[in-house]
Amino acid sequence: MNIALVDDDQEELFRLSELIERQASCVGMTIKRIDRYHSGEAFLADFTAECYDLILLDIFMDRKSGIDVARKIRETDGTVCLVFASSSNEFASESYEVSAHDYLLKPFTEKRVANMLKKLNPEEYELGRAVILPDGQRIVLRNIICTEYYNHTVTIYNKQGGAVKTRISQTELQGILLRYPYFCCCFKGMIVNFYEVSRKSEDVFFMNGGKTVPISRRRGKEVRDAYTKFRFERLRKEMLK
Image (cartoon, rainbow, N blue to C red; front, side, top):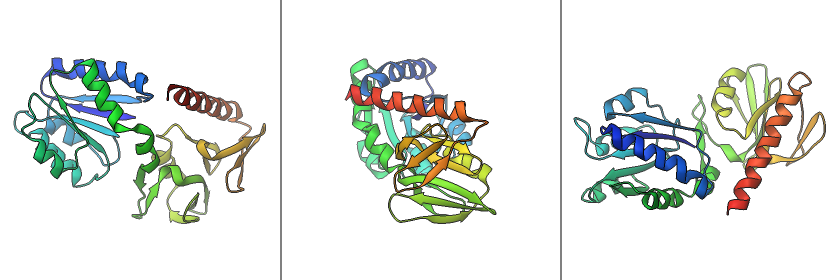
């Protein structure tokens, strides 16, 4: 999970970051990165849609408040989880306006942060996570079985809705999908979703739905190690439930 924290109080910012890192593993959540911003302006200067899974905003900040920042976020990203942080709940009604997921009261404590993370339900969120392709198509990531590139066109094989085609370079597609650890480019022009691997031989992935995807000889060890790590992490999460 990619997280952004926005608070103009540096001490609060680092305390919240530490609490989230400590509590994430307790609720079965894997943190990929946490970015910290000292103002809403600095955050918005870097922000692009779909780059974060969770954005936690302090409400009372100089110049742009957390509510102001959330409104700008919702202009381009309607799915990211938004959580507001404040010493009071007087802005609860505004949080509904921008479809905020939760309201985290200060002072931050282990219990409050843990409860906030539990409410996020990362598994349910992951199942519905989607990206927008350059041609405007919306693709649910966990719906993808594998992708295949040929002649400037990518075919995306899905569990539901059949295959879709889009004109995009393989490099662009990799930039979109390989940010997520369950996708892997295992052969030139082909990307697999590890969740959809039914079984594996030394040099082939057998995918749900009947597709077979070769494993590159050159990158064989790297690909197999990535799949082993994915399976280990998945088993660890299941044991934590």
